Length: 274
Image (cartoon, rainbow, N blue to C red; front, side):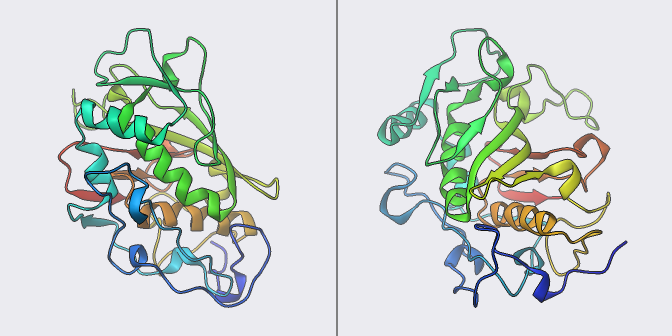
């Protein structure tokens, strides 16, 4: 294992250049997650996910972090996951997000859709054409909007998603229990591109072993390169914004060695990050 990251090793995850002092932490990073107004579109009235500060002198991912925590009713993951199909469609229409209906079979998916363009300045690369793996439930599209609203100010322009919908996908350790992929409510993220043109690859840039924490003061990157720091900062910013209920990393098991798994689950009152 390499030396732990020191405060002076951190870089600006938006531009790739070092900057001055850190900005003040927004409420989302002070134990008060951003909320969605139940009567409006997810980004109305200041309800979109706040972009966390970009630290130049301290790695963002070393901030105190709870790997499992209870979520208040206002947490985006809870609000989005619990929307009815009708409410989700209304919010989607208000936001005018680029989607088209999925005309094929989508067993287990409440409202199957396909992306037809970038969201909030971020292009999500996802299987298209006749492939079912790019089908998204309406609620997952709203979560992508929140995700893009978080990532774009941090310099992310493009995100590669290996798959979202996998019909009949099951959890590996729970017998016949279905994965959220079976409901088109999960994403497998493999790469992110920055405005600088730099590409962050989950498989090579995560730099952590199985069983090690994803975020928090205990994290020690094996090879603390700039790409590794940026990737870890971005992942932990997503976790802090509570946009998803379950966030799994290469540190979880070998099945996740090359991607982040992010999902929503109805009636789930907690978040798990590992």
